Length: 604
Image 1 (tube, rainbow, N blue to C red):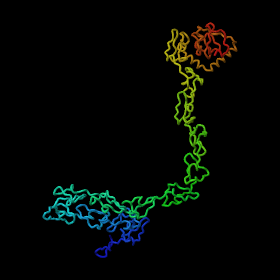
Image 2 (image 1 turned 180 degrees about the vertical axis):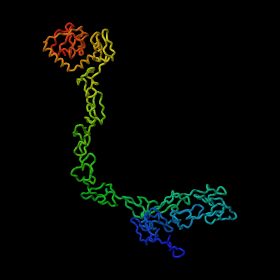
Image 3 (image 1 turned 90 degrees about the horizontal axis):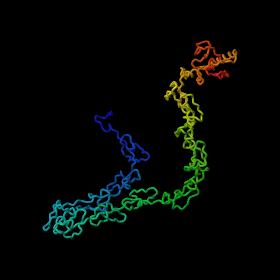
Image 4 (image 1 turned 180 degrees about the horizontal axis):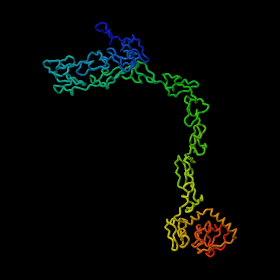
């Protein structure tokens, strides 16, 4: 745009640069491309492949010279630039094509060249005028035919437009029909097609002579009987049709005539023979291929029909087989399992380790069976989610079962019974039956013992002469009895010292009290000998009291100084021996024994 022109008026040479030609640019096409005409002008200052090269060299793009047409657009050309010899065929003439003009038309010269391979009406025929268009006047004694009557040629005549009698000879049949007998008289002054005409034949039923075929089966013939001139055209040759034989076939001569307008495999190709016809035999180390193998040409050779024998080295054995060692040669080009392989053994004789199950029907992966070939790890109790029944405790989830199906003996341990572990219930509880199973491997109080009721739980009613103990008093068994819940009226228990108090005293007396009593007894014994005056009991019933608490009015001495009233339950009339200071013993007057205890062990 900034170029300065040579004068006030810009010219082509000032503003434009001529594009080069493919020749002047020395453009070279890549492999697989063909050069266009070297005089071709490029589309820009730099020539490109699209300017100078092309890949498509078929007859589809070829322009045939006048009087010829491309006979097959897909025919490949033998050179980058197609030629009329390869692509074109001379258009037929109206005579050679056998074209017949329909009624009302006059054929042109038979030598008239058609515009394409198929002649048309416009190529070969001129429309005849009508009697009206030609302004034909009939002579005296003649009658004019219908003004629309088409003349039989380009020049109308009296026979076309006039008639003296009504015979079919003067009748013009409609298109596709012909007068079957010109002398046939008509029934009226004006003949009809019904009286005079018969349908012309078509080429569809015509049999062409050898080497020709009906070119269009729907072509109507000019008479009721068709001719080869009207219906037939020469068949193409294998060369002119561009027929290409497929694999395993050999092409016949290009001049071979095809059997129809379209060449076929049987027209243009011969099937190559198979190795079943090869009789020369194969050399040592070679084996024949299957007899059905097709040879490359019409003559079979050892290259076609023989192949080097294989070895087992490259053979892959099927599942369940192992390669032979060393690898033997094969007897044919295709090795077989029988030649190259040995069947692997089954697992039937294999011994699996503990906690694995044998799959006896499995085939081993090699000639020597392994655990991974034959054995399947048994599941664990956790993987199997085994649930133990009541009375059993689950083993560890990682415990392996004895087979592929976990059972109770694999995953569960029977819980012990209360009798089996000799469980001893604490005070205030009653033992359950010895066959009672525990809830786990360790029996507990809840498993083996039932808490005894209290007198308040069972609302025990004491008989006359007995007083009820505290409602919280526990019974000695599961069934409360009178001895558990009642105290005879007037006993020490009814005089204000409850069973709970007695138990508290018994529990709270420490071992030190016993030691003090022993020490006091020792000194007393040393000074006073073995005489010991007993205490009298106001009632013999106190001998049965288990906690040995003294009756009302009994004399006793508490721990500490015998003259200290603060350490006694009641002031005594005479001092008690030191060894009995913590115990109660009735005097002979109160019904107690007069003999002295044999030892402090008995007094305790």
